[in-house]
Image (cartoon, rainbow, N blue to C red):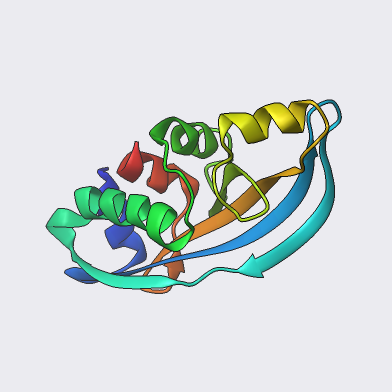
Length: 149
């Protein structure tokens, strides 16, 4: 059974309404001790759009990358996405995308990283839980793997 057939078993339509939603937790990160205390959290903006069935795979990949970079202001790396999607159970519907950031939620510079290693600057780990739904149904990781990897 193809990925599209699996989705059709869940949802009966020719055009899908897709929604990407996420939640961010921020943790203080220490070079020697690793992730420490929780510092902040928030619900991120949702993105909704329509995709014709025959363009689902390629459009969803593009939209997810755009969501990560433009809505979450995170650096998109396919290797991180692949690692995340392959580390969860098939039936899970949320996956995590982690991002190393400075106090302004931007990718730290080499100088900032060196200062962090020397204990002179605080850096953080953003742990972003992402859920993709189609016509209101959260899509399981097993199907997301087939669509995105």
